[in-house]
Image 1 (tube, rainbow, N blue to C red):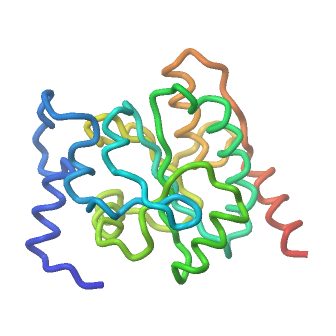
Image 2 (image 1 turned 180 degrees about the vertical axis):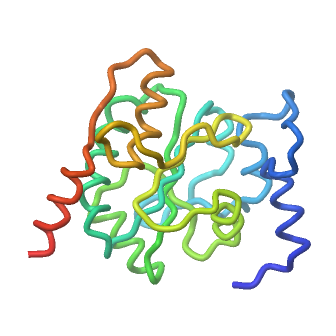
Length: 196
């Protein structure tokens, strides 16, 4: 999908890429909400999810994953475990951004993995803008954004944990919780077992 360069610049500015600081009086995730249409978010089963539900959350995890990715099939259940333990009544939400080849594969993956969070609809123009802003490549990758949609945790080395698990531990530390671990070795072993 080709997005005119001026649109990318305008929307990148809306996401806070202009170098300026976000206004304190904006609702949470206002930059992201500006690029999402009312039909941009879906739940497993294709049901619509109102993007305004994000406005009440202080933190937002963006999860890039795909069905054909063996490491994702190890990472996703652990992320679901974290979500189920801390999301209810919590201050965060997770949005899945599919790396799948079609909306049908994306839907199948969400259903088979039993993802309890919403997703940005397959092919939505907001995905290209988000990927450009994050300079996202590869998966599984997990980013943690604050209420102004500034990146506060991105994939990076965090001891022996998988690089994308870093965002989970940043949130846990912020909330005085013990870290959860998901080692790179565990992900690779699990992915290798799935290939056989």
